Image (tube, rainbow, N blue to C red; front, side, top):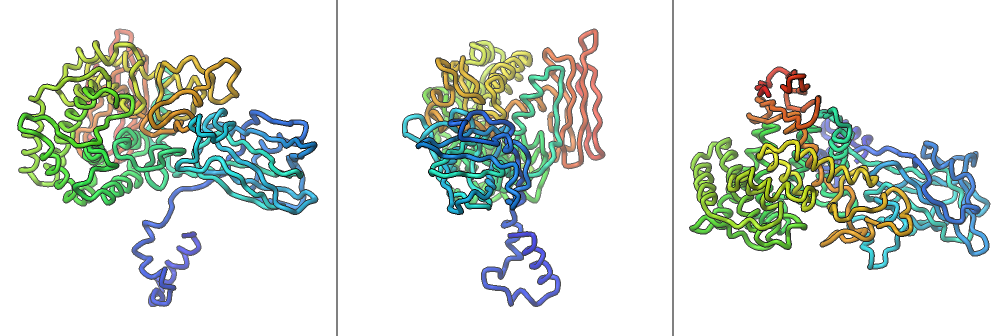
Length: 586
């Protein structure tokens, strides 16, 4: 709905009596406006460089495409990039917009002598290699979720907007034997125009870049709903939301996209269904509700969840046997890299069920249902008394630590830190880091962040990926053509549902270090709903200093920690009225 139509509609309502005269499709719109308005904005981004040209002798004025334009065709036909077909040869070029974006393209044309539309092929890519590939059924390239490879007719002296995907690179191929005049090719970047209220800076610029990259990754996925990925998996996957929601809470504070997405999952999954078809994802819904309430303290919203929440808990009780072992149904899932280790999946689900029951108890207390809270605690205690085999994967072992059924120091030594970053995953890496923190291994956790997430930056990433494996290295950078003999990581690597170019290079579940650095290095721990009471307990590891901000519903908390000459940490915290702060001295 346009702003003009909203203005007209508001005027009709304010002046009374006119609603009945509206067309039928408009009637009742006053109750739907909030759900219809798209609060995102769009802006144009000019290409930053031309990565590659084919038949460059048939292209003139290509550098004109790098200048910011106004989006409007005009009669001057000045500063025009011209592509000419000749002798059976047709030119192509590849543009780099500088960083990953969500949106499409706006192509503005000039006026060659022939007025007929001109066909071009457009290929969008998260890597140079993807933008240069064909959809051939062998390398994973697809138009799943978002059509990123298509043929388009461009008008004479006009403009066309096309594409909806996550991309950084765009390739344009002239298909017709003619002359094409291009005034502009701009990315139409769609995003929520919201401030980065939280922040993080330290004595290690690499960690600072990782924190910001995680924040930006989630920001791109904050579209109509909180998506998992902006190229593929443009969906609300509830389990995947938990790291994203923790990042939203640490960077942006409250945003409507979180409750809107949680409600979508609830409303599209009537009980006894399991969210996204996986029992574990309904467990994650409980954990997200608990953490969102802790950070935001919205009791009205929480009360709206009570009927579903209580029904879900009753359903979970039926999935615990008399010995305290979980009996969750298929599909049994933690994340893809751990899916081949049934023992780890079983240990993870046992642990995740305990954590969900803990969350259920906390939420039930807040909702005034003490008997349900007591039953949650009783069932969780029974489950903690049930021995489980942990398997070899770090995912299940990390959850066992967080659920209180495995010794943190032993688990860290024998599993989490063993092999360094081998066995880490972008999704469950967040919980591995939290388990390492429980063992007091903050320096080791910082090293994992630098090595594992930092490796993606070293390869040219501007957002974090659906998956990453240290065994994929060495590999060529994703922002340059792949040299002969080098590994084409995007084409050759990946597994499960993300083989080759189907692999998403902007996945919100990979943002865990952003939330972790705010929680454990800045040291922000929420003690009361609505962030009204915070514990500030910094763990600098090998850092000399760290500073940052943290958003609360009452305002921004500003934090600074510095290591003194005698090894102690000196802290300074400024909090808004209504936020009580406890500083734990190191």
